[in-house]
Image (cartoon, rainbow, N blue to C red; front, side, top):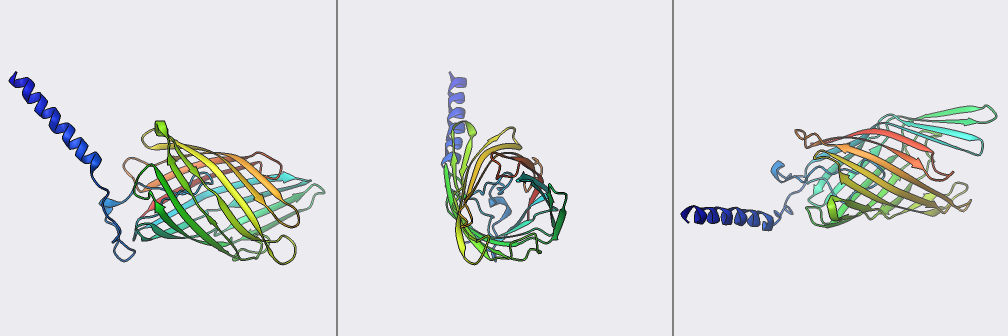
Length: 287
């Protein structure tokens, strides 16, 4: 009887501790800023905007840097007697946490090549630095946990690209990523996007709309697999162009290196206007 009583007391203690931990409130991190960084013991799990095309609603913790980059990115597109190959030799995005739910992000390709081959036999190659993208991401809910997360991410593109690599125009837009925790450990990201792009011919701007459904699942404790369907409609006055793709990706965060991620993936075009294949390998690191 005494042993049974002791066992019940011990079990009650374990349940009590577990319940207390489950009900423990999320620490208030609103006071942390770029000048007063979030302590390492309060950092969120590493969260990136890669692999695949999806943008997650998570932000980098205040006062911390994060770099996310392709190591190599290869894209091939063919149509109308013309084939084009684009290669990115790294593609770094540098992020800085300004506040607990706000970061600023900078992206530029140091060197890329665009090779165009016409069926008649002519081949041209343009190479150089890419355009500069500056983006802010403001998380409105779910940055520190929960079943739902939402953020706003406006961006602007500065025409820093070499001739033949970029279009030489200032452009911009906004994304509104939403994230849902689904049953059986699945996670869904929905990424509606609106852009204001330069017209292909002549002055003026036009709308571009994009979106995706991205599902991810923890294949192991350190490897996450992703699959998504992406679509884009460019309403250029010259003619609307619609693209779509089916994308697969995987990311590995080593158990002993929670601030590092290695990832890769392939994007497969679903219509003639979309590049037939895009293959990439990338890394991320938080500091």
